[in-house]
Length: 158
Image (cartoon, rainbow, N blue to C red; front, side):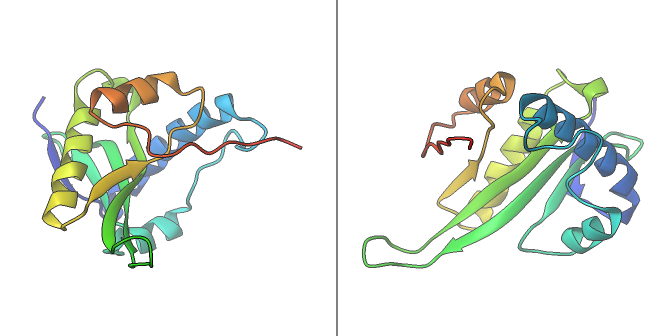
């Protein structure tokens, strides 16, 4: 399958909304106490604004028919120097999802590698993301890509 990765545009909203729904359902199955099944993270209007934001670029992996089969939401974080650390930039992956009909074709790896290359071009120190506990498939995927644990967030539900 021939894939191209490009910035998301308005014409991609239906496919991105479908992908956002798919990833939300994964999270809702893991944490129904936090995520509401049947919803999405963003509205179509919010997506248009996000798509135009260079500090939060969204990329789509498209096939030969220009159909979006995966998306990559990023946030460029610029950390200022503090008395105990230097300044640095991070590319945070806010969301990476591949259409359930196209999984197993290497699209996630291509999107992830694109994020790494993009971060290098921007002069970022690292690429970061969060994986919900229990999402073992995602965790294994990112470990296979070379990611390691930077920190752990713990909770006590009250």
